[in-house]
Image (cartoon, rainbow over all chains, first blue to last red; front, side, top):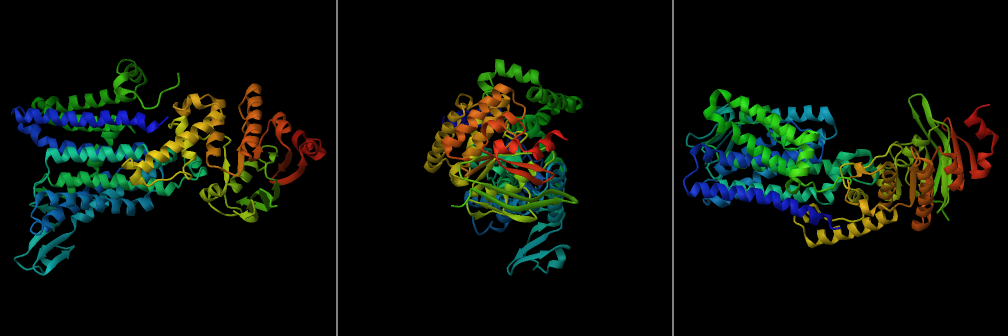
Length: 351
Length: 253
């Protein structure tokens, strides 16, 4: 009984892994053993973990293939960076401003999640994947055309170029088309990143293991049966999609406040696919797997830089090894037997 | 007193095919009612009409005096119709317990935020759901498998779980689509007892489609025979099964 108690234990292990990683890195940092290369990787690691976990909510839990996840990250990144730059004078407190920026990034991404989700979730399977891909690209390209500036009279907006806005010469450019946003305050730290990872895990893991999560998984497993027991398909698909988009927005906010210059071209198809690779290799529907896969696959190419020529070779071998580890029946059996204590599934297989 | 199910002149066409035509069906509360007919007679289509999967193009469906014609599947389920499927449709990657809890979905509610922040309301509601679901599982002798994945249950138990899940939605009328399909004689016998038990224990009205004549003649009180989408014969089980028209439809001249 009390099935949520059982999962609680497994969830604690996931939180524990994240906290242990944070402590280990902090210890390395304080003793001066952390290379500058690794230091620069810390925030992106958190970004990709959040991105992977949020995408797993759609792909693994809700069972819909989304190829436009970078689009939501893009919305969150630009909304939050825009706010941070516009409010730079108004809210001098870094912490408060960044906190609000993250909320705004999440909120904007969630709104886009709803707007895109309503038409897109009427489709299924391959069609849904293609349409999310299209929307991801559309978001990126639309942001590329925006010019927004601010002067003493207020905001100016154009979709042509900087000069057709009629801005005073003393005004500042906030968003300048393909050049994006420059001079974003560098507020992201590893500590904040880890906090956001924990918040994301908390939301996703608890959502999955609640009445709503059960409904989402029920729809994934059998749409017709879910409807027959009175579960509202549209509502729960949209819920998963929106929460996932909002969390991708958080990842975007963290990402943008780690860069001096933010350009929309970064949020292309490759980024969406990268997030999908994390999810698939970590195990579809396996949240802890997403965390580990995102960390390993983000850090690996950087750490292997010294091997130059062999870098991508090793990277691809790791990809294959991870896939086997997570999906091959023999490997699963082996895991069950020897690593059962660490990888125990929440639901026991038949005896 | 209103009948539990009162269907008048129900019909639907798919293109040029008249799948169900002018069907009347009256079921009293607490009755065990059978729907039989040769393959392609429109039995499952009739079920789909009753549960809102298809919208009828003529006729009326009253459930316990309430008009449910043309309503959505979800509304009809909330009004009190639950069903099982000819080809079992469980939530395979969920535990047996969670399958039943998904059936309780509309009877125990808390907000999404309550679920995320694990509020007392969440704990209380989940506990109630667990208790209620376990009670149902016990009735079907599935309580020991509560933590197993639904996909790992043997076939007969999957059928039972589907019935348990349908009952979790607290229906007034239970529709069973070929519950004995693929079962061996022993399992069928056990199923007959289960169906009887469900009727008595839950005071349920049951409409079932079945090809297994032993099951039909064993438990159904009344029968309707469909043939080419139309009612061929209707009445007490023994009378219907000895009707020459029915014998002809099943066995040929």
